[in-house]
Image (cartoon, rainbow, N blue to C red; front, side, top):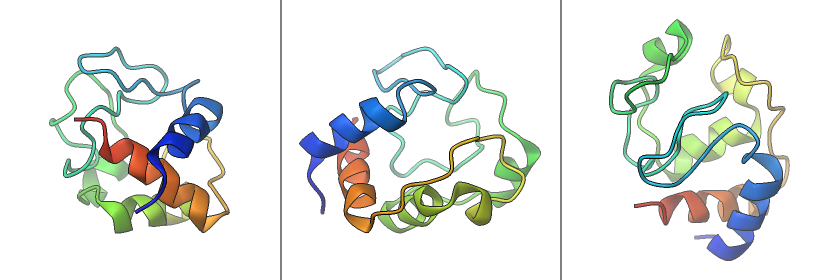
Length: 105
């Protein structure tokens, strides 16, 4: 497991312009990511966000492995996603981001 404190810093730098994390937080360009671990991508488990059909069809469950694969190169993992983010190259940074996301319960 990564360093959640560094993961929060990375999240603020790389993700916060498009995502919120607080419980009941509003969606931005991307969905609120509170309690994302264990949720199915593109599902109704994140109400009020208009997911692409591609995400709905992928229907994967977010865990350490799927988040790692997605964050490395989002458009390769889920072709057709609207997310304009290029990805996180360093495996350590991905681990830290995932450790932070895991704290959001």
